[in-house]
Amino acid sequence: MSTKQLATFYAGGRFLGIEVTRVQEVIRYQEITRAPLARGEIRGLINLRGVIVMALDLRRRLGLPDDATELPMNVVVRAEDGLVSFLVDRIGDVVQVDEEQFEEPPETLRGTARDLLRGAYKLEGALLLELDADRALEAA
Image 1: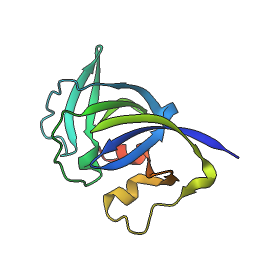
Image 2: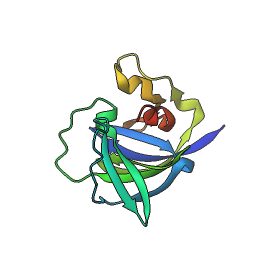
Image 3: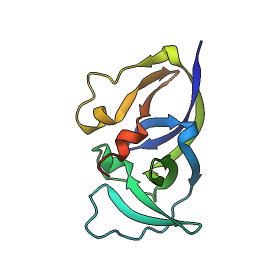
């Protein structure tokens, strides 16, 4: 039986996770400097201890309503070109999942979100959607 660990978080009511090895750190809201002419899902740039990091709004990237009432949290992820922050509604836990529980994205899932997800894990009382971090960063 093969398992892996996912760092979990919530965006637009969705329970999402990415491989824990991709996560550099999780931090509270940081002031964002707007990036002129950037695509809509790019909220701007944050300064992470002297390193400039792009802040990507995961709700917008997944095509979800932008109705957040609280400041987003940052899930700082290692990408090919450096660090990127996924802005999420709130942080979950690190969850160990059994690879045998993995399922392809549900047929009912349409649009951009379907292309950005690796698949889903049915957990007790929840459906955990595994985000493909690389695809989420494409064209960002």
